[in-house]
Image: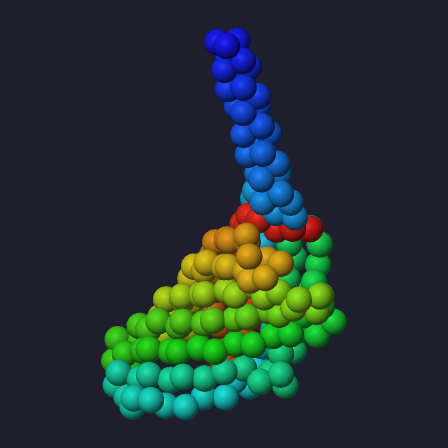
Length: 184
């Protein structure tokens, strides 16, 4: 009788172990890779649509980028290039908060890239840039984090916008970073 109990317990343990392994494999099926890969966002952007929320000297401006303002946009992930408008749709909203007396401000940008693949997954980049108006132009430097949805729901990342001087009316965006969870 004792042998039957030990045998039954052993069989139940094996079944529980096998079912938990099967559940783990099923849950991870289609999951993305966990290593970090390079992420690079390069764009030439013009003609934002803006609205002044608060006047000088503490200026607050909100706006968005219409399709006509996207001169070019290429995102390179893990050495593969994706281009607007062929590979994804582009949407951008931003807020500028600046003290015109000190010349210092903050630019907050939310950019969504909706990829043209089944399910229309999205990468959304949240960028915060410190700006300083100088005699040489506007100096900008920032950081971002990035998350994904749907097929890209395991994607997270981070990076920088290197220190650059901006040209009035033209945004030469360059964001460099790392992401994990990229499925391709």
